[in-house]
Length: 151
Image (cartoon, rainbow, N blue to C red; front, side, top):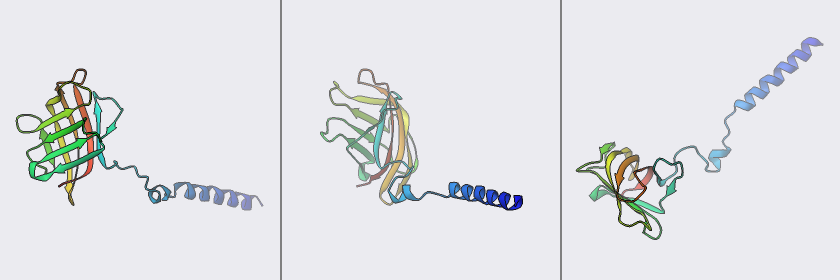
């Protein structure tokens, strides 16, 4: 009887372990994944509060990434020397300009980089982390862009 009890107890633990380790596909079926979401997201001064641009795209002929708010008053223009998978250092040939609603003037990056991690199937993905001046209180802007359509 003790052997039967031990056997049932062992089977119970084994069954629980297998069920617990089983991959849950419910998240994928509902569209919830842990990958980056499509779009253009940015952070000011290293904060964890992200802002998503309402529209973002890439003009391939000009190597330019554009992100804007719905009213067009806040946005980014990132001009690069290319759109290949690479790191682009901000300087004389690569530029980032940030326009912010309510701010006087605009913000211009003077250092940092834009990293393109993928350019495939007409979509561009990457990150940026730049430092600059021009809008009081903003010294750094960073963010991600994922699957932006290249026009």
